[in-house]
Structure formats: C-alpha cells, structure tokens
Image 1: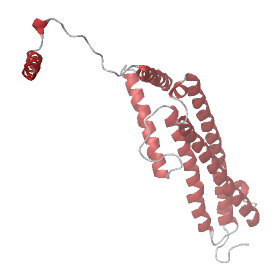
Image 2: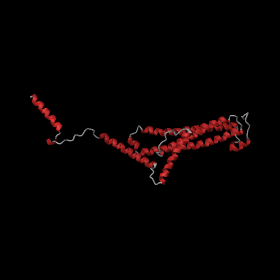
Image 3: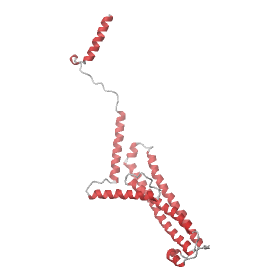
Image 4: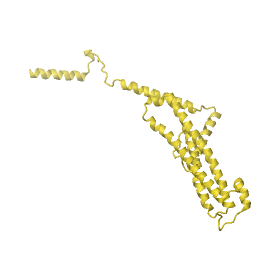
Length: 251
C-alpha cells in the first residue's frame, strides 16, 4: 500500500533502488524482514563462537598443569579458535550481503512506493542491522587478539558497541605498527608461535619445579657441631657449670 502523504519519486527510485525498483511493497517488506531476521541470526551464531572460545579457558581449569601446557593441547586450542574465527568471518560476509540488500529494499519502499513511515525502517536498520554487523566484526577482532597473543584491551571488544569495536581496531593497528617499527629498527619481534612455545616451556618448567618441591623434605637438617671442648660456646659452658653446682648443693 502506497503512503497517503508521500509521493512516489520515480527518478530516485530508478537511481537508488536499481535492480529492486520493480518490486511491490509486499515483496520489498518480505525481503527486508527476512534479511533482517537472518542478520540477527548470524550475529547470534558469531556470539556462540565467542562463547565457545571462553569455554575453552573455563575447561582448562579442570585440567592438570601438564595437560594445559602440552604442545598437543595448545595446538588443538589454536585450531579450535581458528575454526571459530572462520565461522565468525563467514557470518560477517553473509551479514554484509544482507545489510546491503536491505538497503536497496528500503530505497524501494521509500522512493518507489512512497511509504510514509520509512524513517522507522531506517532506524531499525541502522541500530540493529549495522550494529549487529559491527558486533560480528568485534568478535573477529577479539579472536585476532587472542590468537596473536596481544594484550587484551581493558574494555569489551566482542559484541561491543561500535565505539568499543573501533577502539579495539585502533589497538590492533597500534600493535601492528609497533611490530613493524621494531623490524625496521632491527629489533627482535617475538611471533605468536614463538611466544606460545616459550609460554609452554615456562609452564612446563614451573610444573616440574612444583613436582620436585612436593617431594623435598622440609624437615630441618641437623649439622653436627664441633665437639672440641676448647671451641664450646661460653654461654653453654656457664649453663652446664650452674647445673653441676646445683646438683652438688642438693647432694
């Protein structure tokens, strides 16, 4: 149904709606709301990947230090998180397609059908659709920070607001710039793989020290003193003389 107070703009319809200019209002609404729900579903899928990554750290608390520090476990964790990053990246690409297609359907609703309440459509689109797209991108940035062993920012990155996500993106750019600057100056830059191996060795050594310390006796060691009476402690000699004197008086 065409708006009663807004006229159709055929020139803008052909210019902005492009290949969707021939859609009816019902068809445009169906496509828009279908893609709207699909984008939210993609955002939920990416949030599940982020939850799985956090769950790995929670499950490691129930494992022994040796199992957590083992190279096999480390490789599996990295592979799992790379897979989660791939799923989030696929969701991001699909969400981009959905958001762009929604934009064309909104141009159809606004200019080709003259819908009076188009501003409500644009409000939902900008807040929930573009916001969901940036939230998925924030999950990807969080995965990159974890996989590269970069210090995590003090604010929420994954599923955060656009301001927080772009602030984290600046954090990533800063880390990349500093590494490139160190390479240009000839300084050593520790890669993520080298850092993970170093952490594994350090944790393994710490666990070995704990094992050794567990079996070391903490009882005091008695060292025999010098039995030479010439080197006895004067105070001890005085105490022994007092004891002998008391026994003599008692007798």
